[in-house]
Image 1 (cartoon, rainbow over the protein chains, first blue to last red):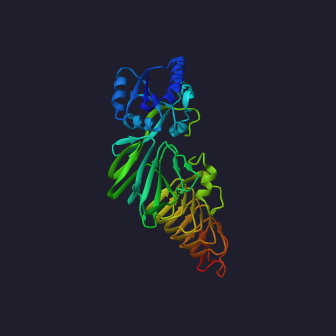
Image 2: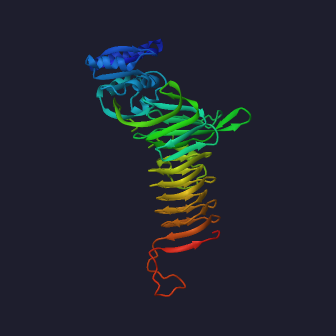
Length: 254
Length: 157
């Protein structure tokens, strides 16, 4: 049995026709199921566990990167197969998973090509797409072997499925992109150097693939994991191998 | 595999000086950027590009690139390397080592193939295999050579 978790933004008129076409196609394939709408404060884990008790085997997330992150960060440990139907803008994870945006995603879903995905673990919760540590005087220890520090502030981005986009500075028109590889997490460190009295300039990023990392600082720093923001003084980030069973497309990037 | 889509952009980005002269862009895995300091046992299974400062030890089973302005105060072990920065420590390179004109090495080198550009500075002992059975100049024929031939360089090449 299939359960579909729709993001709330899909109520907007821009997406109504796409959603209708998708629902028709899913019915044609014989994989239509119960539709649930998730809000900002919905606990997706409780909902999914409830549905699993009622016999659900496949949970399909319908929305964009933030929907995907919101659902999987909580419910990665649930005993079911996950699917994803990307709709609307901000769908970079779907590209990595090889799922085409819009109606074509239904065909990928119906083929049920399954893979186990690695996800990130940070201080007792999971993150699927990306973890962002905002600039601060940070110290990073990799795999308990070596320590990385910068002269001034430093920003850290840990990518799992979502690619890392960056620009040299504000005037740089060309957006650079680095795709993460599977089997490891990738940390992108960007030190900041002082420019004038108030300003800061971003330096070129350093790239470190890793399996375990500790970030600490003397003062609390801001962390954003799958859209959820918190203040921490020390975080431990690990890679959890093969946690999520996911339906993927043929053109996946791993 | 990391740089699948933006290959041309990132190749230029990661190797702007063209230090290595080799096409290693596809396999780049670890990059130590400028104004980043690394302390400890820095090890990687993939290629390493160093543009900042590293102290402790560096170990990779693939290619190591030390760019101009980078500084390593560590013992280095790698499959192959191209150096344009400064290295203080012993280097053990399995295959080939390339020293560009801006390279400064302060330590012993153990390597199979060595290429040195004019202007590179080396202060240390260079050991290369493959000279077994050849007599050392100025020694009697009775004195057999050790396993490896040793050349000591203490001046600017």
